Image: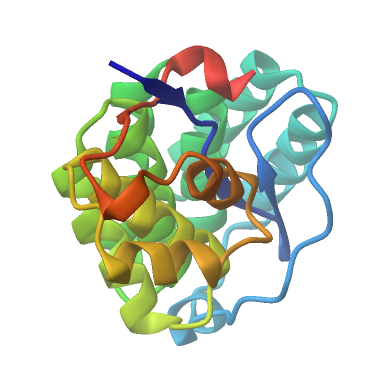
Length: 209
């Protein structure tokens, strides 16, 4: 049986500026812009919580994920509805291979702001890291509901569907529309003749380093 091991994508909101890229050793490139929800515009985060979150941002950018995690937990202990800190908490957990905690962090981010596409996209990443392709598909679909143009969500939806053996024309279209995401290009290179059955899709925690 042929196997394909794919790194997936995460969107991390660093104190107001959006960054996206592979979860890999290289630094993330500047991202395309994603809309900020009305919730985030309305919520006035605590000043001390913002300070902790800003300090965490610096640590995350230096790949000091454990240090960033502690600072984000401090921020959330002050302001439990601080969406940016909650989202970045999941980002830190994923890099520390604490995938179940990352999943819960992104689920909490969705509870805080249920119309933000980034929360659903990141929950899809966490689900993919656990090979939970059903949740990954549902979450990516929700992300696209709120932002139909997000290439990362398209890529994750295609990966989640392929992981369930759905090597269909719809999946190929999703991957072709998100070629800017390395995961999509990798799957297209291994696309099975005639559309299936395709190679098993495995997402390993080590892919996040």
